Length: 314
Image 1 (cartoon, helix red, strand yellow):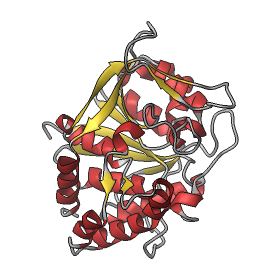
Image 2 (cartoon, one colour):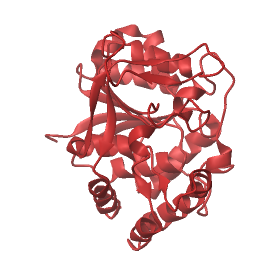
Image 3 (cartoon, helix red, strand yellow):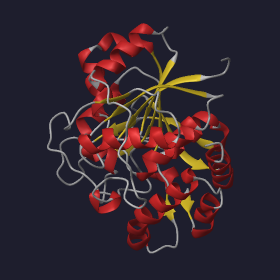
Image 4 (cartoon, helix red, strand yellow):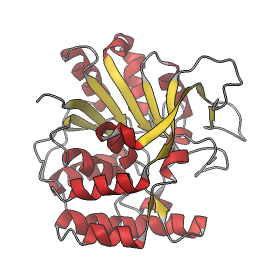
């Protein structure tokens, strides 16, 4: 279909990952999901690969290919976030056992083989979790770098500092070495950090908009968010909570909702104090060569209108 973007979703669901996947699957005119690769992150790999299949079935897409990727970061023990997402990663609604199979191929090999089998620069990698799978693919098969159209990732922070440590955002902190490999690669990159996702705040009124869709998807989205948001509402002392990963898919659908700068972004991999920090040279003072578009602002009303409208398709 003309205008469709071919994408691979790399993810560690997580309630906000789930909503990002639903947004992509609710937008078939613009987005063609070639496959979903799960990575360990918010919860261990066994659960993230299961959760990805639950979401596909919720969207009535049991035909999608879901692959399990890396079960630990490249050089570190896994750190998870059950304190936010619950023991399943999708706590909130009553979950069901997925019937669709998990593919036998490793997620990293799927990424490599899919890029090699398509024309160069026709596939966008949409990264919603730690970057272990992507960095592992680049390390294993560096020839695929020239074949990637773009990486669009949720991760990092600068002005908003950290959400898992004082300096670091969770996705980058879990596997900073993987993030460094991706950021230093020659691939075109767009980063949606906490600086923008912390502006996309789900209020009780917005949750009611999801519930009022009157569908199983609308109800499950509401119940997932009501669970996961309790942590951020308590932490930040607000009546609303940020919605991170759907920003990646929204950016693909309507990039004009977002604005940012093409700057240099580096990842700290050594310091115990600032491990996983994304140092974003927003003001261009370092002299380092720009390597990524770092998004800083979003049309919040436009974002939620898009998300609510598309979820109504499911």
